[in-house]
Structure formats: structure tokens, C-alpha cells
Image 1 (cartoon, rainbow, N blue to C red):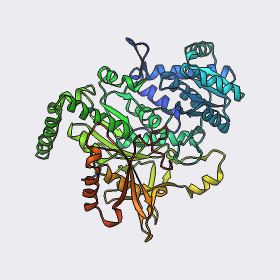
Image 2: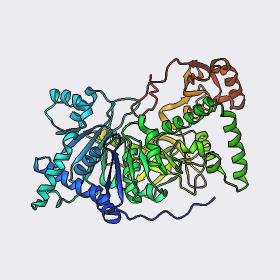
Image 3: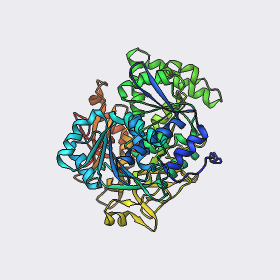
Length: 530
């Protein structure tokens, strides 16, 4: 297996340059599609998007919102995207807010970041009212966005150039993104224009995508913004904005996407839905037999997957070829499962402080069990403890007004990720765990909790697992799939069977079964402290 030359894309250094590049190169091609009503969708070309961004920016400048920090709160929407571009392309700073946070948390983040403006969707108008009771801050509703765009267009037609004449520098701060974190208070990650564009450009050089996609990742997280939006501007493909995961099946049928960007939880859920549908129809055995048959034929160079699994693939619209996974480790079993159906899943790795993409597997160079090869915009190495360090154009400016923490994680340009891993002979990066999650045994040996959890997930009905040290032994707390009736009855035997093939140092000494799922952050990561 050999790597191959990177895909060619023009390098741009600011978000404004990215918008200009896409508008000039792809012009009338569809950039974004969003539902206006149940029966009507609106398509926006790359040229039209630029016009609307400049119009909104002009209106914001006219109202005095220049060189500001603006909070952005709402579900994925055209208005959300317009606001993000308009503020950052005009030299301002966006603070994207997680819509699942409480009003108290949102007030804290707005105050901590120094925002003087909050732009929110109509769905969160009540939170905006709560914010105004506590902070001196202006609020704009996304419901008024069309009027602001019209106002800006009129100003530009009358010769207004205040916004269009602004110059943005690559190392200007574009956004403060707060980490959700499973421990401690959130940290404000300062990301520049260079950080974002380097990450998106590097990802586009590693991966080629074709056809439309459905945007299902929340844009207030860096992975959704950089991969599912900014990187698409290098491809020139159409992105359909999914308003709610409840509508996902309908959106798949309507758009028939050829690629998706998703987090592991979404990928696992999609596959479990396939299995559940087969079980409900009494076809689970047939599905397993078809997978075995297909894999045998594939090893002989015969690919019948698209024809054999047509009914399964139709659930995704019938044209899905590629899913790019990021945000958290994805169990390799799901990569294999989707590959059996004729859908490639490419694992990647990122962290907010790197805007966020660091490495990703490639279309024709995917190393099993890895998170891919590092992007061309950064260099990756590991230190003597196995900690992954990153240096490059995508590494953050630092933490907002927290020099102590910045100095702790940044040294000579190298960012300490807190993740443990190694780089193999192919140059691919592998993750083995988090430093904070290491289990230190009585003999001083360190065991990765994630390595044990990975083994636990090989038990089919284990949905969630956390490994830890308890009274000198390795313990596991599990949440089981309630649809499998005999899960609890067979668990003890399955743990014994697992222990027999694990080395002594990794064997599980005690097990606790939870009645409910683990508490999670808004990014769906298990809060281990609890």
C-alpha cells in the first residue's frame, strides 16, 4: 500500500479569500440549499452567497457593528452561515454558542468573551431576553436577516464601500470557540483566519468528495464548520442544510447525498438502524449472509455491493459513497460494516485547538485502525510518553485571556494535544487514549482506558463503556442495548471469554451495569468524572 500525491487546491489565507475564491471559480454552481417550507427549498449559488454576505456585512457596519465580538446562537441555517461569514469577513470575531447550553452558561460565555452583540434564531428568542436582563448587549434576530440583507444591498447600490473595502489579515482572530471539555470550565480557543483556512485546505488535499452532501454536524463545533462547510468551498459541491435530525431520512431521499461528514455516534446510530430494520423484517440472518458472501467476492476482485445491498443503500438515498468521521474515535467494526455495504468510511482526527483537523485517511490510502495521515498544513510527532504534538498553520493563537494555560500546552509552536498515540511505518497516526484517562496499576504500569473500552465494544450489546481502576483492579461500567433481551444473562460469560484473550494486565476484575446512558457533554462525549 502506497500513498499518492495530494489533490490540488488553491491556497487561500483568510475566510474572505475562501469566499472570493469559491464565488469566482464556481460562480452559478449551487453552494447551499435549505428548506423554506415543507414543500419548497431555496438554492443559493456561490456568487449569490458572496453578495448576501457583503450586503449583510454592509448593513451591520452601517448600524455600528464593526470590529466587534458577536455571539451566534441557533440551529444550522442559511442565516447562521451568513452571519458567520459577514462578521469574520469584515474583521470581526464570532463566538459560536452551543444551542444546548443553559441560558446561564450562554451568559457566562458572552461575558467571558466580551461580546457586544448576540445574533440568535427565533427559536432562541427567550434566551436572548434572559441574556439582556443580565448583560448590556445588543441582540439581532435571524428572523430580521432578510431585511438587513436588503438594507445592505441598497447601501451598496448607492456606492457604499465601507464593508467591501475592509482588509482582513491571515493572523487576525476570526473566532473564539469554547471547548465543552469533560473536566473543568470551558476554555476559549482563539482561532485565526489562517487556522481555519489551513485546516479546510489541508483536508481537501487529503480527500476528494463528489456530489452533494447533507449538513448534519452542528456548525458551532469546529469539525462541522471546517469540514462540512469550509472544505466544501474547495470542492464546489452543494450542501443541503438539515434543520433537524428528525428530517434526516426525508432529506436523504430528497438530496441523495454522495458524501457525508459525521461523528461516530451518528455513524453507529445509522448502522444500528440498518440492523434494527433487518431484525424487524426478519432479514437479519440474510443480511449477515449477504455481507459474508460480498466480502468473499470482494477479495476475489468482484464487487457486487451496490447491487446486493441496494435496498439498504436506498435508505441513504441510493448514492452515498463516502462518510468522513471525526470528533471522536470510531470503532473499526463500523468502518468494516459500512465498507461491506459499499460505503467507505474514512477515519480522521482533530482537536478544537487545531481548527480542528489534524489527520484523516484518504480515498485510496486508508490504513486500518488509524486516523489517517497528517494534513500538509501541520507536522505531527509523539514525545517520550507517547503524547501527540502538533505544529503548523492550523494551531491556535492561544486561549483567550489565559496565558498560563496557553504556555502549558504551547511550546516552541508545538501544541500538546493530551492524546496518546503513535505513527506507523505508513506515516499514519494511531490513537491509543487520553493521558487523563490512563489507568495506573499497582506495579506502576500504565494502561489506556480506551484500549480496554475498545475490547468491551466487541461485545455486540455493549452500547457504552467506561474503564477505570477500582480497589486495585480494572473495573468497567457498562450501558447495554436494551433491545437484546438476554444481554445481562450472557454478560458474565462474555466478560470471562474476553478476559481469556486479553493479557493479564488488561483483564477486567469487576463490572457494573448502568440502567441509563452515561451523562455526556453537548458534543456527546461521556463525562468520565461522573
